[in-house]
Image (cartoon, rainbow, N blue to C red; front, side, top):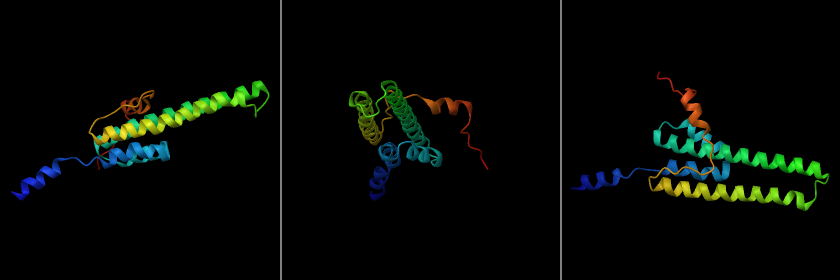
Length: 140
């Protein structure tokens, strides 16, 4: 009788690494998701890491474009300290940071529930790379 109870408890899958994959993106951006993606062998965790990594790469690109446009507009205005030039871009960067925190928390909660949640506004980089076979693992 005790064995049946233990088996029922073991049926619930441990989703800790899947949750950590999304939460770590708040603090380490690309690096945390990349490490989990490269080091894990579990298919489900790798799928979540790929999703989180795609979001972090997309976020990096969006932030870089925003900073580049801010720099260009400052040059065109001729004043690097003008509040009216810098404010819209700092607002966009702030919104991107808020999106990152919110999306990572939502993805972690969904991962805890066993649901695969795709980040909105994400460019799917790793799907294309995996289709080309760059991440094939060789059996020894």
